[in-house]
Image (cartoon, rainbow, N blue to C red):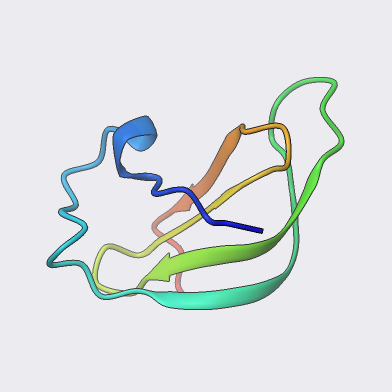
Length: 68
């Protein structure tokens, strides 16, 4: 699975070239209504305290102020 950059869709003030992130694996459920997709990879940005993923249908999920 190719991970698509979440920067454009999230509208966050994070620059891909400068952001430090960690690749996390697990089961990340889609947050869209009536979508039951599950992503197996997510990116965690410790400085921004942001966890983000994309489900197989292309919906972006995120948790802000995450203390991973």
